[in-house]
Length: 136
Image (cartoon, rainbow, N blue to C red; front, top):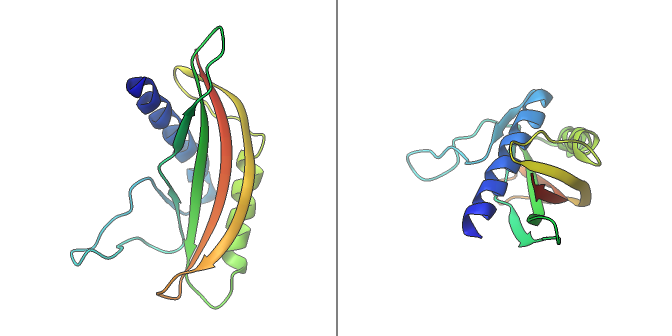
């Protein structure tokens, strides 16, 4: 079971990087770190967080119910640039398609979207999606 979860996680993250790289900002699955331990990422950027996977098996196959958070990080005096990026992510992914080797996408829908202000003054916009995938 752990191997199937890891395979699903890698397949989803790889497909999301492929789709979101077309937006035109840096896309990370692991944030670059500076020597002092702080972030060394450029702004704005997209960070595809680690997915939360649950079982979603059927009588005919193995599957996963996935919660996937996608962070948009930006700096500035307005939340509009990041909200525009969040809207682009929604347009690309909500009821969209992902090409994944070994997996079929059954559902991809945005559940939540919100923005928080970080201690350093930057913004963190979060799009949270629910995906259901089945092993092919």
